Image (spheres, rainbow, N blue to C red):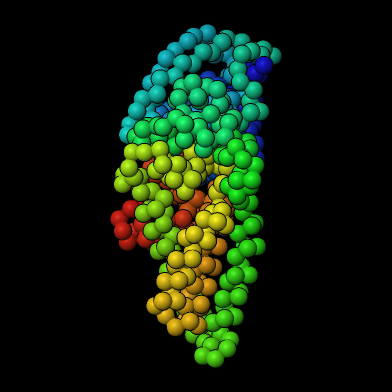
Length: 372
């Protein structure tokens, strides 16, 4: 049962933790999404308690993806009172993840009633998640209620279809299962706090190697090289994100490459708000970090290499923490608010640009700045 609300009642809900909006004569509680809104929380709060139907149609003012409308559907809590009994089909401009303009046809049914009336037949508004059965029926892609990797292996999806689907965000209130094996599943889930617990001691150890023993660096020089390592990490962060995680066009059309893409980064675009699949698993960090460590030691004297790589690894820790922070926190106004909007636009508007997570520096240098 879904309630019917008056305009006056909706207008009372204008705070970040109590935010309602109206769209096509339906009422939505978007409180849990305010901090994660790709356009920034202030844009939602500017229209809190109001009708956003025309705003969401405006391609110039604030373009919305297909996934945005599906997310809105999941936040439905009721209907607006005194709306006439009609059923209308409307075409709403939207944009797919690759920037192609599409038109989503929606059917809106409203019923003349008063505030004491309820409407039956709607989804339970407490389930702020993708409707799994409806998603499978509509998209003919993965069933989020079952282990994902086995499905991906058996289905043998064409590359173009896989790439389109994996970049349409889905949302669950829990972590979807990737592996059938409980043992393997453990390695696919990484809580954010594991990153600093594991890698800060490594950074500390490498700093001690850099400044101790015969030929050890003085603290000032070690600090300068350490800072250089952090700068190198920012370029590494950009390069990995762009040329490894998003090397979509160069991948062959095969199930093997689909699986590799999915495990490396595809799952993050498919389930962008999954808290346990957002920071790098330790195994992946070791696989990517070890060659960098060996390269540094082949090019530099041992103490310098240790100081440099300590900075690189520290930069990585900051990157993963910032990445998680941007997805799941109401961020500080300074810098992080801008980067949150920027990064979520990479997920919900255009994944072909905007590869910087901690800053836009290298996007500006290499011409991949995401225009918002």
